Amino acid sequence: MHLIAPSLKLHRFALSGHCHRVELFLSLLKLPVELIDVDLAGKAHKTPAFLALNPFGQVPVLQDGELTLADSNAILVYLAGKYGDESWWPRDPAGQAAVQQWLSIAAGPLAFGPAAARVAHLFKEPLNATEAIKQAKMLFAVMEQVLAKSAFLTGSTPTIADIANYSYTAHAPEGNISLDPYPAINAWLVRIEQLPGFIPMKKITA
Image 1 (spheres, helix red, strand yellow):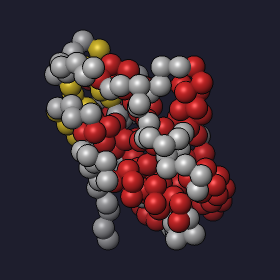
Image 2 (cartoon, one colour; image 1 turned 90 degrees about the vertical axis):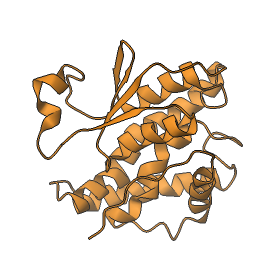
Image 3 (cartoon, rainbow, N blue to C red; image 1 turned 45 degrees about the vertical axis):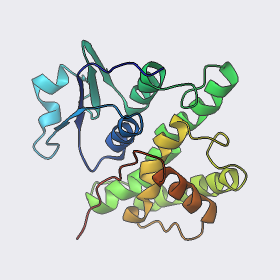
């Protein structure tokens, strides 16, 4: 059962895949939210006011009434548990473990692979783009095998595992990583994009 959401506020950076996964899930759940853009270039995320919300100085940050929560994957778990149903976040231990595996992948190989390659290319951050692209290709090879056998990462229906891994996978070409060799991944991206309430992440144009 969906509860009526209190005043939800999302502190975000529009070009961040971590922020997009939260914004996307809010939209899929049809939850109204106030979007608050954080000026990362101006170091707004390092001000005392923002650090009071998240001492790590990172976006996204979600405020739900009196609750303030950081970390995109933690926010997905919270939203699914409070406002979604068990199709998004299974209540059984085996189902939760299957989803958690992919949340860990989103925080690990996805972050250090396609996400890092994108940041290195678009934002000229001093990261090892060659190593990031290598990690991305290793990850996508595994995802391709999984998605060749099932419609979504943990089975026949989408979960927050898919939401957590969508944004940086879809935008891998912005890090000089072609998705052409991965037909199953491309089909999965389309399935997510066809979900009612889907919203795309902003693209950077030259």
